[in-house]
Amino acid sequence: MKFKKCLIFGAKGQLGTEFCRQLGECAVPVDLPEGDITNRFAVEEIFSGVKPDAVLNAAAFTAVDAAEQQPAVCRKVNAVGPLYLAQECEKRGIPLVHISTDYVFCGTQKREPLTEEDEPAPLGVYAETKLEGERSIQKTLENHLILRTCGLYGKLGANTLGNFVETMRRLGASRRNLRIVNDQHCTPTWVPNLAQAALWLLENEKWGLYHTVDQGETTWFDFAQEIFRLCGLEVEAGPISTAEWNAPAPRPLYSVLDTAKYHALGGPEMLPWKEALRKYLES
Image (cartoon, rainbow, N blue to C red; front, side, top):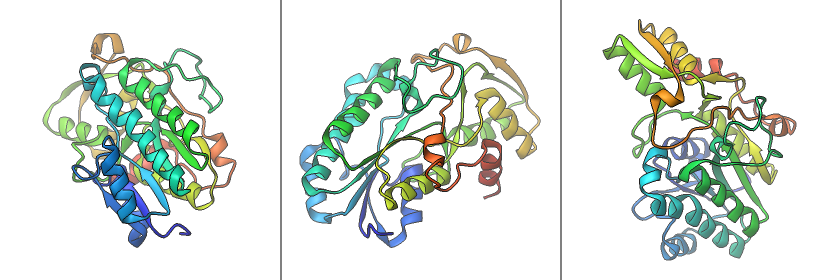
């Protein structure tokens, strides 16, 4: 790795933990409470003390429904914090890797994989603040990587409550009947695949915006069915609609991301989602 000191914010989450694992001795992990990206002075102090030559931001407010009740907090983490990081990186002439989301699309624009050129149309506080974070970085720092991804699952970090796969495994082992949303089309992504892609892009200085998700598309219902099958869990799952689920925050009904721009560069392949899920469960 040409970048020998990579400062990782959100280092105790799923993705931050994987960044640390893949970077090894090059990783300088920070997380709450000291690694608070919403505190400009704390950010400045960390940069000054560490003197990194690259920064990776895996910190985010990802509780989509809670964001509707805590919009100010969500905006500080997802929009203001990334701006502070970009400003510090710009002052020091170092790159920033930032993780964004498929939620920047409303899900009704078209029914084919969305490219980096498609115009975002976020719905809800979480989606709006993530897009604001993207645009703040783009305006502030030339050498940036913004990676949009979806439905991350991987080894749980110290600050990770869970992920969809582990939730389905837990519920599937204790309940015989489950109702799962079947009209949200997306591509859940295994964390090691995303981390590997991010670090390859950083190493090769391929600055810009990229869609980095596993390949193919599914719904949460079909994804859960595959989890149950691979785990040998006998669950009678019933499909429901997003409207029936009636969650506080809106979800995109179609947010499958097109990874052609990333794959055209020759980076490590984002795996087909079924293969990635199998590898995760085997690991």
